[in-house]
Length: 543
Image (cartoon, rainbow, N blue to C red; front, side, top):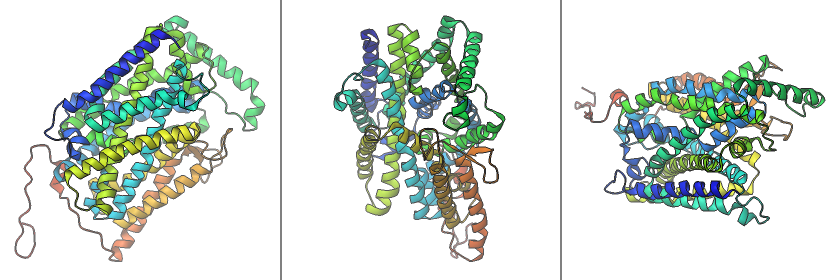
């Protein structure tokens, strides 16, 4: 362990710890004992704060570890993360302002709140809430995986035979995270996001300029990578032919073109279905803040493109690691001066704390609003709701910690794959409901169930050279033996077909559609707009 790097790392970690606890007094509320204040930061964040918060929420530590790791391992399909984070913003520019408006008008805290209000369907709202919690848990666990990778490269606890000593730094980091999230709520990750994103931008921009200069320039890097992958494919030709190894390439082959675009599109559609993404959006103070951020957030995609190329830089620099996820931290250790390597390590670890905090808050809000309030205490006070969310946010973090320490890392990654498949199945109920009330609530429930079941079954059947189940995100099209596509897109297609087929049948059969608590004007309302209730005549007709 390098003392200088460790010292810089500890200084920056302590800095964000102080900021996390100080956040309770930042933009101080009269009382943090309500979900609007603790769980949504008072719904008052402007463009500048929201840009850091939502960006810090989406671009996680695991992203900064995993994206270049896929390229280091020779999987060119992994570069899909860059176009998907570009495609997503025109999509959210259209529907997120509508979700913000109706949530602002009715006081909705979670996507499941909106679903219940729109369709008067507790089963559908519960399904959306449980899907959100289920998909978020492995996402939090993967932030821990990203932190573990950095700590291992730094040498903290890696030489100990005791599991307790080895993982003690992780326990400490998450204990601190749990403490300041409990006390400050969403204000803590919002304030820390300033430090996190500044460090990330600094480290990545320095890395893509300084390291290529040190090892011979970008031309040399690409030539070296091409040669390295070609040598690997030649030496392992028999294993590749037998399916025991995967070929390495810098560009997807023709057979993977459909895999590439379905991964990009499916991931883009799913990203803002995650509860933590919606939590960041609902914490803003107006529709215009969301539209401005949809225009400004692609700056992170530029950063991600630069970051992805560091996987190739690691190959050209001769980085040798058995776990590809260690490639970028190891590259930083080999190429940077010790003090700047400490800055880089801190950037990645802090980059895990911010999204982990938001994810745990979002999962806790779902529990409180859509499980606790729906089935346990149907008339809770604001203080009871806030207390429930605070306690559950601790349990969620603890569960993620146990998950990572007790199970294999591959299992965590596979569950995250399933998380993407699962969360996409909530899109018809949420996004469809923002534009039309035509879809029948039971058709939406049936479509969700069909998509969840088939997507899970398809993922279970995927084999890889290292495991028999949950071996990857791609399957062959049902009518093709060669064309691979993203599982989530196939499951989503089945979901939509079920909804479109069952809706007219159920409506024709006269099955109750449920009452809609919303009005058309709710979907375009902005902060400060007067909520004018419709006037009713004695017969109940709206005037």
